[in-house]
Length: 182
Image (cartoon, rainbow, N blue to C red; front, side, top):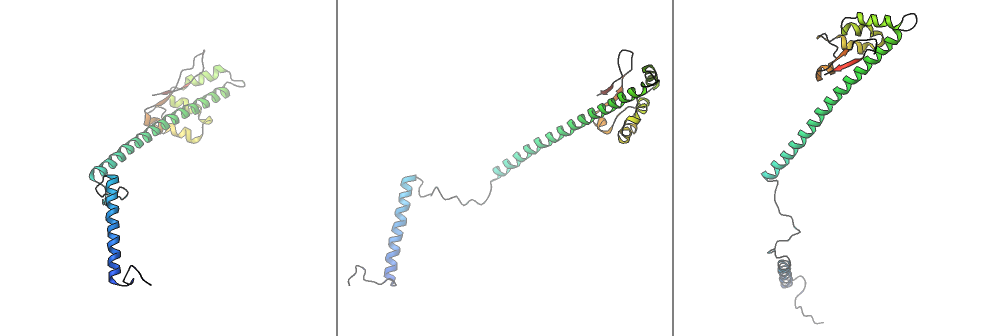
């Protein structure tokens, strides 16, 4: 049997010939890539071996995180202020409902509306008027307002927004109201 190869597979000459053909293929392949991509041998699919972030990239990320955290903190602050306003309005409504229940109770039966009006007018301050309706309030609600050192009807939530409650005068043409003064 004759062969164009006069050497065996295990011979050094065979390996040398194989390496020569392989290196010619690699060179031809690189030349082909350069012609197609015009990239002087740089393979566009291979990522560069850069180790980490540049200083500019790092500063940019820190700036973006700072801006986002400022936005979040502003939103949280606004939500806290809005919740204090809601609590103040709810407390106003609770006091108004207690006042309406007291008027209804004080003017029923043998007592008339005139006696309820006289008792209301006899209470000289807002704290005294709150004492009139304390049986129509929960103990916690009444306690929130009587612990105020300023002499005005003010809960902790109202103190934080600078608001207080005030009872209006009771005239013959209208019923008294609880007003939120800001």
